Image (cartoon, rainbow, N blue to C red; front, side, top):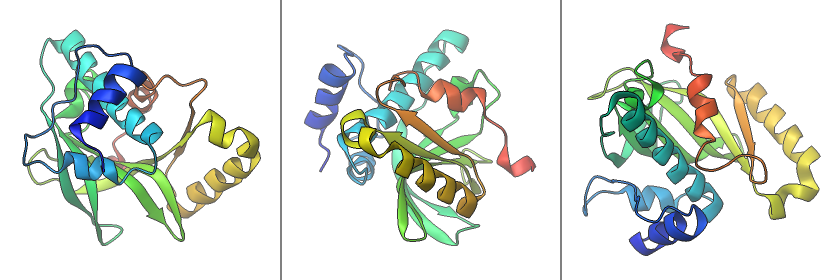
Length: 194
């Protein structure tokens, strides 16, 4: 179970953020439960890093504060399924003003018999969005995955062929958890316009 102490540890000791902490929806919010569904602390660290990136970009580009993220159940119409997700309302502030109205990170997204580290879902509204999966994210930790890179590549190819959305692979040794989400922002396209 991810607790506030775990989040503090990740921010302070893993990400070296002395004062910044993610702003979740309050003490009754389910964000910690959603983060607990991640497969590892490495995945939690990258999710928190995405939040930090969006918040820093919003403050830098528009001098606004990103709305808090909420642990929420969302419905993906194409999957006909509900998922626990970390939901960001109006994340477009962190996309330089041109991003989605809502963004959700879904830990351990199921794809057949496999589970991807997480899916990125985009919503068309900040109140009651219709959600669409925009990408699948795989985080390859150095110690765990360095001996199985080829097998991970085959897995990513299978997932991409099954889901028909991009599979974004990030490597712990070369993709900083505080800036990896910049790639997502730079390659954002509105899946609802396709």
